[in-house]
Structures are given as structure tokens and as C-alpha cells.
Image 1 (cartoon, each protein chain N blue to C red):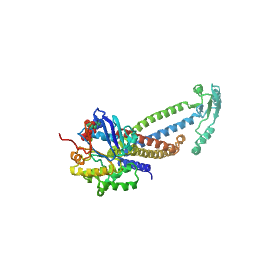
Image 2: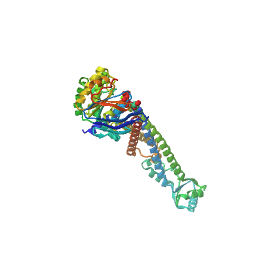
Image 3: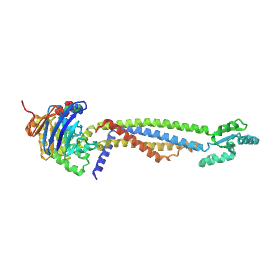
Image 4: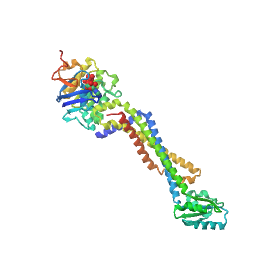
Length: 301
Length: 228
Ligand SMILES: Nc1ncnc2c1ncn2[C@@H]1O[C@H](COP(=O)(O)OP(=O)(O)OP(=O)(O)O)[C@@H](O)[C@H]1O
Ligand SMILES: [Mg+2]
């Protein structure tokens, strides 16, 4: 065992001791870091899920779907079709029958497709035209052109939805970032106060260490270790909570048959590795920063 | 071993604590620093410990210019200087043995070396039988002997003491002086600031007298002050 290893072992030991002796405040520190990271996790999952929905929907961005009434006459179907074809900016028009729509839906739902079994006889899906536009610019004009025609039940296009989604995602992102920054600052503050207590408790010892020729690293090391440990514990707790908590929520949503929802949600555990790395980095970062702030303010060596 | 060359110290608030100090102390000397309260004795010691920076002048310690050194070098300078204070400064939750071993652990000494060295030093200060006692079980003189053991355990070439007998009764003070003398006899340079007139007069060692930050007297085998 060489000298620097012994010194490192000493520093580490004192760091653990400091944390243990000061565990009351330590719990508050760990709690605050855990809270920040859990909220960060929630925001991340929300944003990623919304991104999923957006990109899924975006591929249908240049499409307009015109749903027809069930009891429409054959002749009207053609009239509507011709009217659409004659509109400016229409690249292609495809007629999608009820049956085809059902088949598509089953494919979309994949394994969950079985849920649709037995619905074939009274297929609730309508016939529809799917319009491919030359450019999204034409969407409003085309919709205006055919709106109000007899036999049309609903015209659906995705521009509004996408805009809504994007602004919601943005809103979540901004609020999330603000909340997280505030909570991080609070955590740094709480940790710096925790470390301050250890610093005060060890003032005498530090003073003696100084005169005996302990290096700055040796004196500061245990306090920084304490901060890092608090951050690490907070990170591990939040990783477990976010991982298992989300898994649980996901299962509930899935069981209640909101399959349509969950296909868009980020799969549980998919983020485990990324979240773990990120949370540990942030937790340890907050812990270290809290210690440094405290040492700068309360310990002059 | 220690050299002050034209050293002055003015504190931030404007107090002139030391004014153009010149002292040269050889290896193995025993030197008393005397003077009235506020004369600048502690400031002189703090300059050697790099606790304060000189305003001007040059300080040499063990052949090394320590006037201007990087912060991260300071601990290594302090390892050359064992220091003892009036108020002992022991750790109450550590035994006598642990208080002394602490100074070795801090610099990463080998455990076998600690186990060998600590009892030797405790023997030098005649505290063998108190190794496992806690500070609150010790008398004032014993406190100071532990502090001395801690100061010399890493074998520094210089031992500095700022009024080490200030809190002790005369008999106990003499015990401490006996130990300091022994340490000096083994080759350690000793620098001691004190108000204890009888000790200085009896020891017949070099005396440097300060007054208002100036050296007013520096003589071999000196006394505390002359009667007029
Ligand atoms: N940190 C400081 N800031 C400002 N002035 C100081 C500081 N430390 C000491 N002084 C002043 O410098 C002068 C010398 O102080 P110093 O402590 O060196 O005296 P001393 O000889 O050790 O006195 P004593 O015998 O009472 O211990 C005094 O006037 C003191 O008030
Ligand atoms: Mg003094």
C-alpha cells in the first residue's frame, strides 16, 4: 500500500464518517436531489413521448382524410372524388373502404389487433378519401373547397394537431427546465448547508490538520466526498423510482386498454441506461457543487 | 535554519506589527522571543507558518525562500515546522495516542511507521502510561505534552511554541521547559515566544526582545529584561 493510496483511503473514510454523523441533514439533501431528478425524469418521458407522437403524425402531415357518411349514395362518392381531384394542389387521391380501413388499423395495432376481432360485421370505421397534397400550403384551400358537400362526415387534417402538440411539448420543456433549474439551485443550497454543518463540526480538526501540514486536497476531500455521496444516493433512489414508477404507470395505462396511448409512449426500461448515466452525473454534480460552495464560504485553508 | 531579512508586516487595518526585522537563527539554536503584549511575537511566528504574508522583506526556512510560495506548497513548508500553542488544541474525541498518530496519518505515513514512532515520542514527553486516555482525563501540563509530541512526531527540523506555558502553573511550566530542552538537545531548532520572565532568565539562552514591532535586543544567554 503506497502513501497516496493510504491518504485516499483516509479521505474516503472521513467522507463517509461526515455523512453518517450528519445524517439528519443528509436525508434532506438526498431528498431534494431525488425530487429534482424524479421531476426531470417525468419531464423527459413526457417530452420524448410527445416527440414520438409528433414524428408519427408528421408522416401524415401532407395528407387530408375525408370521412364519408355511411349511408352515402354511390353517385355522391364519385362527385366528391371528382371535386377533390379538380382542387388545386392535389397530387393523388385514394379511396379507402371501410374494410381496408379496418385491415390497416389491425396492422397498426400489431399484437393488440386481436382486440378488434369481431368488429368486422359492424365495422364502425367509415369509408374515406385520402388526399395527398403537393404541398401542405394547399391544405386549407382544399379543405375549404370540399367542406359542406353532401355526404361528408368529417375532414381531418393534421396541421392543427401537430401545432398543438409542438406547442405543448415546448411548454412542457420550458416549464420543466425552469422548475428543474430552480430545484437544482435549492438542492445545491441544501447540500451546502449540510456540508456547512460538517465543516463547523470539524473546524477544530481542520485547524490542527492545517498546522500539521495537511494538503488542501486532504482537508477538502472528505467534504467533497460527502457531497458526492449524497448526490449519488439521491441519483440511485431517483433512478429506481423513475424506472419502476414509470413501468407501473405504463402497465396501468395499458391494462385499461388505452393501447392507442401507450404505442406512442416511450417504452419502460428503454431509457434506463441513459437516465442512469444522466441522473448520476447530475446528482454527483449537484453534490460536488454544494460542497464547493460551502467550502468556499465556510472553510479558509 | 531560519532567517528574517528586512521583514515588515502591516496588517490590512494599518497596524504595523513588525518593522524591519533581521534575525538569523542557526540549526540547533534555542531562541526566546520576548516583549510586551502586542509587540509582534505571534506575528513573527505566523510569518513562519505562512499564516500571514510579509508586507516586505524575505524569509528563509531550512534553506528555502518561503517569502512567496504557491498555496499548494504551504502544507509542505508547515511539515518542516512543528508548532505548539498556549491553548494546546487537542482533539477531544481522540485518545492521546490517536491525537499524535493523527499528525502522521495526515501526511500518509505507513501504519507500521506510526506504530513505531508514536510510542517513541510519547516516551520523550513522558506520557507512555497515558496513551489510551482522552484529553478530558489529562492535566494542563499533560495536554501540552501531547501537543508537543504531536508537533515533533514527524521529525520537523524546527519547533515553534507560542507561549506554551501561558496556561500552566510554574511547576508544570518547568516540566514543559525540560521537555523542550531535551528536544532541542536532539538537534531540533526551537523558537519560543513567551512572557515567562523566570524561565527566560534561568535558561540562559538567546533572547530576542521585540518592542512595537522592532528588535530592541538580541543577545546570547540573555535575560527577559534589565532592571533600571
Ligand atoms: N489579524 C490581525 N489584524 C490586524 N492587526 C493584528 C492582527 N493580528 C495582530 N494584530 C496586531 O498586530 C500587533 C502585534 O500583534 P501580535 O499578536 O503579534 O502580538 P504579540 O506580541 O503576540 O502579543 P501577545 O503577547 O499579547 O500575544 C498588535 O498590535 C495586534 O493588535
Ligand atoms: Mg501572541
